[in-house]
Amino acid sequence: MHSKNTVRYFCEVYLSGNKYYFKQEIITNDSWENTDSLYWGKKRPITAKTFNYWKKRGYQCRTVYLYNQPAEIIPFDRSVR
Image (cartoon, rainbow, N blue to C red; front, side):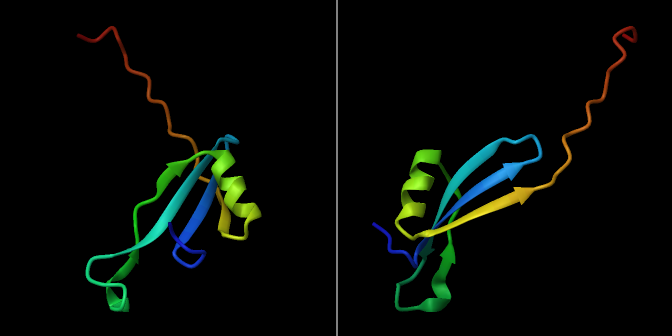
């Protein structure tokens, strides 16, 4: 179990309106006393229910708005073989 200082939660909102929720924890490759070995681990997917649960309890919860344009669809000419 992580404390409020060693875990953070994200809600990523895209232009399409889709929302994705993630959890990120501090991990170490040496020891907890060596602060140079601490870093944020990989973002892990969670549910909206989990995000809201921890948000109500005062954990770091951030909403990030991503303004990436959708991918361009390139049509292929099927007549060429």
